[in-house]
Length: 95
Image (cartoon, rainbow, N blue to C red):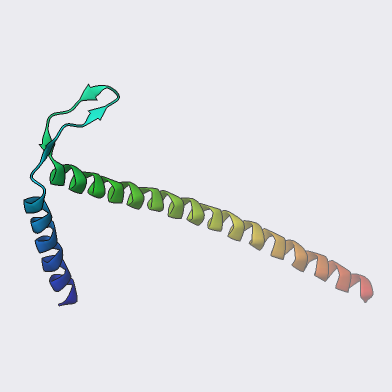
């Protein structure tokens, strides 16, 4: 219920933003002019692209952390095994 209310509110907010910003703008990227588009379309597109880039960069960071976690976990298991062997050898020497 809350998500549907938020989605409807976001829709009306974007709709009013589009109606309030009908100005045509021409973007120039690296010296090449792009086709004219409304200011609201440019702003919304850039916002959405930024969100997509943020999500993908976050996914890459999470994947890197997971790989690092697996490697450290494996290393920790190896070290714990080595410690057990050393303790067993030390105990054998005491008897």
